[in-house]
Length: 207
Image (cartoon, rainbow, N blue to C red; front, side, top):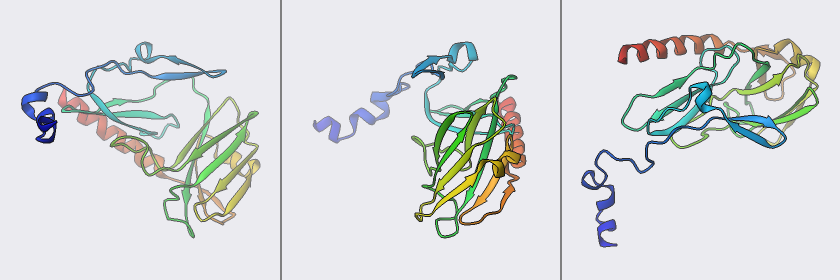
């Protein structure tokens, strides 16, 4: 106990080049339906053995598909861009609070499409030393029609939106302001594309 209190187990002498986590192959689980998940990391080329810590999920290159960035201990980040050619449709929503906080953190959205209902929440942090993008993402599969959406804002306001008003924003990002009936297209995806290009260039410079 005395050694623990003195910080021995966290010192360079004890840890050295080792890691508390160990260098383990990453897992990437795909939803196979029916409550079943399959680890597809190896066939997808996403089973890096670096000492990964935080994971950030976002549409980094603005193509409507979610990508991954893993922050590694004492190493450069690992970037996995989703380049699947066969992918379903999606919709992304950028929520803007008026009575609630501006970033709408804490807002919950229920969206129904293709016979399924999905729920997303705007989060300020989604894991250790990591954060997902603030705009929320819904995968729609092969459905190009949205039945309905319901937003519960942090202020307590419940905002219901007919699917026909969201259909024009399939495969795009919709900007929705708290309490407003107007829905416009958000332009954040274009900036994301430039960020992704900068990341790829920086990665090439390290190799």
